[in-house]
Amino acid sequence: MPSLLVVIFAIELVVQLINTIGAATINGLIWRAYLALPTPLAKEFANQRKKQKEYLAVRHDLNATSSQDEFAKWAKLRRQHDKLLDELEKKKSSLDATRTRFDRYLTVARLLSTRGLQWVLPMWYSREPMFWLPYGWFPYYVERFASFPRAPVGSVSIVVWQWACTAVLALLMEAAVGVLGLVAASKNAKKQKQPVPVPAGSAPAGAKTGKNDS
Amino acid sequence: MSSAALINVDDGDAMEPTLQSLLDQRSLRWIFVGGKGGVGKTTTSCSLAIQLAKVRRSVLLISTDPAHNLSDAFSQKFGKEARQVDGFDNLYAMEIDPNGSIQDLMAGQTDGAEGNDLGGMAGMMQDLAFAIPGIDEAMSFAEVLKQVKSLSYETIIFDTAPTGHTLRFLQFPSVLEKALAKVSQLSSQYGSLLNGVLGGSGALPNGANLNEMMEKLETLRAAISEVNTQFKDDRLTTFVCVCIPEFLSLYETERMIQELASYGIDTHCIVVNQLLFPKPGSDCEQCTARRRMQKKYLDQIEELYDEFNVVKMPLLVEEVRGKERLEKFSEMLIKPFVPPS
Image (cartoon, rainbow over all chains, first blue to last red; front, top):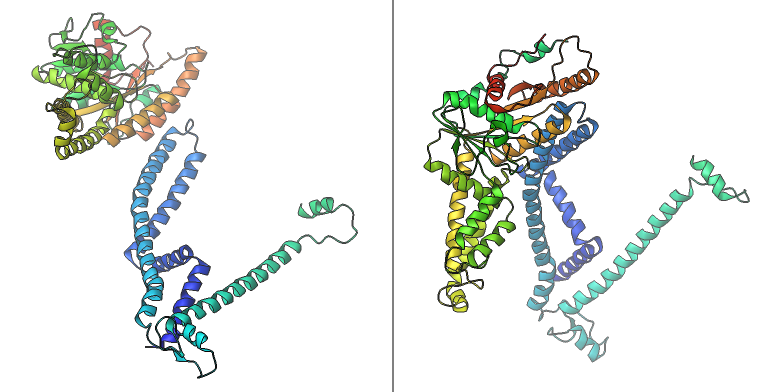
């Protein structure tokens, strides 16, 4: 069992990550990873995708066939089209249900392992000191606060440690997101700028870019 | 022009281009003849009835088309009761009105004590009739079945109305069944409560009675599910599609065949009517042009419906009316027409 300090920190880190990335995105990623495994379910989904492709091909053919000139071919395609559509629809509902169930399990597991632990651990270990403050460095009310709610005075309680972790991680996350956003924005700006080099002092920019585009 | 070659496509495994298979299938009880308006449904059903009458003990021809044509075709007045067709001793015909029969049904209910105009039970039934699509047709078929069961016809031919959804009601018993199950469950659960509200006899606002209503619905459901099982049995029932070699007719036929397949009704016969066979050397411009178009769609039919008996009937110069002409015409359902060459 790693130290509680580390565990609390890790939980807060995970929570922050989930909050930043988004639960839906994570669910989607895990779902895709799950489908990449060689399970029967994955095979079913692969089949469904293949069928969808087939369906689109048939629909394309159907649209390309004149019902007046080649009625037999058109009607056969139409039958195939209707059959595939029917199968797809039928399968879709069951597959969608699987996906919803999967999402639900995932959400429950996620909530238990983050929010659940976030509440249970501080309650369980509320009387245990995480670490001790150097004696006499802080006034009493600071020590009292640091041991909130039930840890021995003079120590840092699990709740306070949690708060500290949350605050620091939130700051760091914000900074990281900001920096990443900046980097991405500058990259984008460069990309957008590059294809339209407008020499300074040239005649109407609109005409120039128009020429460049064509 | 090789019109003879077109007619005789005997590839060995090809289905024969006649309705002989219907005559041979002795177990057939119900034969529907359907298609869009104006393609020759009535002529075809009359001809088929005439041919069947030759090999069956007794045949009944029923028209459910509100625009009754049987009387025209046989030049004889038919009504709601089965009547023997002049010149045949085992062929009977009747004309029923799908809309009329439900009104009769409702009229029959108002005979009771609360028999004011459409109050009570009849009002409820009317609401019901308009609330569920196809229920009026279903009820009229149920009614026909009840009538016909008591008589002993070996085969019954339906000349259906051209409204493409003649058999729409076949998909509906399951819906009604579910609804009924729900209602009866409710009434058993909240029956006492309802009775408290409605009074001891379970009378509904309009003078109808809850229990009576439930009973009516239950009998209705039973009747319709009986029709259903009969019509979905391919030993008992088949559907003959009638069309003309034109795009829209073909399109509707294809849709009808798919629809029938989805209801589980057997169909393996197509009658292609009004084929033009201009005499060799004919200089009728319209005829040859039309013939070319017909040939195009005929080829498509051959290709698409290779598992069907595709019967090709020529367009005659006279109207097919009266016993003799119908008899002559009906011959061609059994012996393929050979165009003059």
